[in-house]
Image 1 (spheres, rainbow, N blue to C red):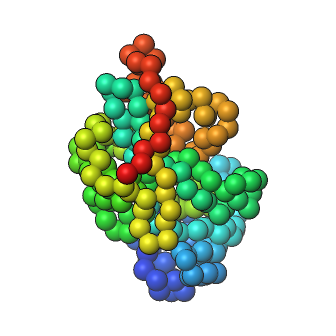
Image 2: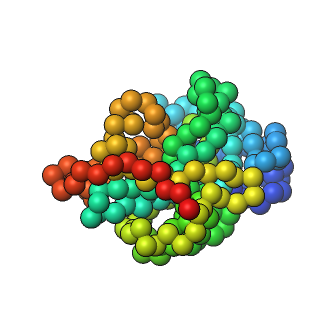
Length: 225
């Protein structure tokens, strides 16, 4: 289904049979573009064979913003991680009073290789020049309505690798944070960190990279140029 939704912009033509044949229990009947403003919102009508063998016609909307990548830089010698903070409108209109969100650095691929994309995004958002990135997983982040697959990366860093101030590009206004992993975990517990991708990478780091027995005490800090 992801291939179907991410195909060419000739949205109203019948879907090629080859794209549907991968799952004989799904037959796409029609796709309709509802919005093609910022990203693409499509309505897909399809037949689905249920577990009892019967067929049911359904319609669902799917928001296609492309795939993305995210990264958690970590310093094993000091037990610290690099995060960002910026305004996120969707959270502001859904209960986040300030609209500010603490996150891992992330960006959309726009057909770019995930490693290249996240290396560039890391430099633009945080100022850190890091190339030894390592992919640890990928996941659909909101499969009920959004097509996006997110590629998750980690990378070691040192303070000397900060080559610029960061802050993002164009309309972005991104604050760079350096926290100990303990401080970051505490912010998850308190609700100050509640971004899904960030929680996933922080928990991965806590389990596999910076386990509690290996951590040295340090103060959380805000990175500034």
